[in-house]
Length: 295
Ligand SMILES: Nc1ncnc2c1ncn2[C@@H]1O[C@H](COP(=O)(O)OP(=O)(O)OP(=O)(O)O)[C@@H](O)[C@H]1O
Ligand SMILES: [Mg+2]
Image (cartoon, rainbow, N blue to C red; front, side, top):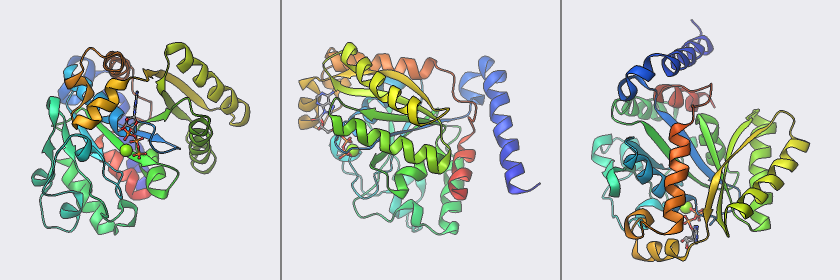
């Protein structure tokens, strides 16, 4: 079978498992859901979203692993006050095993840290990519959700992870530049790579009404210019000073301010994600990394 054929087989297998057996044997057979959290504009709250959604998913009984793919500017460990000894670069240059690099974060999440200045995954040799793929294969039994903080913008790395994931979450805030930059990211993924499915998460809005109106604006433009696009409204995280306070404490919002409005919204959004049926092109984690090798 050629490579494309074997990938299709893998894809079909993922769908079949998703539709029948997984209902009966949830954690054992379900393929890992791989989702990116991205934005056009920087500083819109992605890293906070990744952390708090992952913790919320753990509370809902899913095993979540955060991949910090903001490779040049690692944020996740700093936001959590963690100082990992090793990071992805040590695995990739063969100095460390994956299990030596993964760290336990708060609330049951596991984290694969990046570091500032680490070599970008897109620039890895094929051998290094295959090595990484094999290492991650071993994780399949241990995780349900792989949540990737891609960093901002439309760099090759950001596009690369977005294309490889099964689900794409794009974060937008009320700032007009956030909206135009989100549209730019969606447009590049759509026009250059035919990607059509996106979930939109509004952050830092005054409330749900504002969030929905921002979504409506983005949706209107996308529907008009990008034929066949599918944007789903995922929810709104309100502007909440508790978020900034948690960042200053280097602790996750959900743990230090569990009753804050933003915490409640994170729990709701995590529930929406966990309850939703994964996309049709759902695959296993091996599928994710095999797609990466082919992008
Ligand atoms: N819902 C919110 N309410 C209030 N402030 C928020 C909210 N979300 C994020 N912030 C503020 O925005 C800052 C930036 O958040 P974060 O670092 O998660 O953004 P980012 O998108 O990951 O940034 P970058 O693109 O630089 O990686 C936070 O430190 C926090 O102060
Ligand atoms: Mg960040």
